[in-house]
Image (spheres, rainbow, N blue to C red):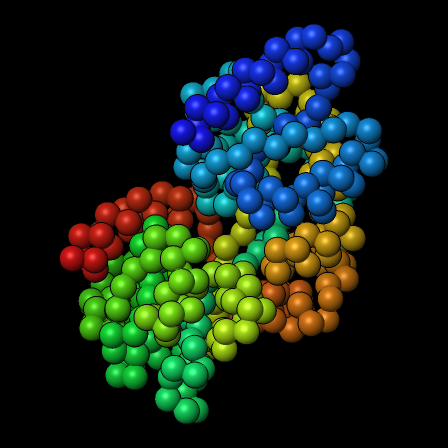
Length: 344
């Protein structure tokens, strides 16, 4: 139903555009997720970009893979000028010729970024977050804590653990690391993964389900997205988010310029604005995430939150970062294996 309404709206918009002079049609189109992600990018980046350039920004939204599929269909006649997606899915975009190579001379703010932000010649990270263990302090034994990912295998967690089913990469990567392997050599972690089964209560399909399961206490221990955890803590739910000694699994959302855009210069400027220290601080305050600009003045309360990395030392000691190519290529393999061997 929504899709048809959107189509009708798009048709009406096209008719309206046809009636105005060509000059007024000039706008930068940004492809992003909907909801808070679009709203945050609009508030922190788009408004500042328009203020500096006079060029309006329009957002088109959708799910991660839906947007990639649409971009492939529209290859050669893109609907957007800029795309924001997860960095490993960004690899799929540029490996399929959907992103243009970035001209770093047009992105001067890139010199102030953590090295991890430069994901490829086609993509730059905008901000970071983590997937990491968390637990309800009121529903676990007094004094319970998580200092290592290995603690998820402990007897106290039996029948209490919630894991995401849409992306099992975090627990697969960690199981491999705990077994002496790596993301690329993930199969060494299979015996350890299989030993986790008695502790798994259920799998969640979305951020909303994750929050429902934590709120109800059905899964008082979870591997969860830090941003979701912070949101629930702000609602008064007693959750402790842990950064294990091995580190938390980092996610980075990245930005790229669509191959075939007619607004390449404006797209580069949009990225440069997005990486501005003040814009980064605002964006991270809205999303509750970590900045990519080392000079972003993050609110001290936000900087103290687990998984919000603001120093090179934190990136070195608290982060598990997997290269985008490995993660992009192996994620479908991991999903298939996980569904067949862990969820049945």
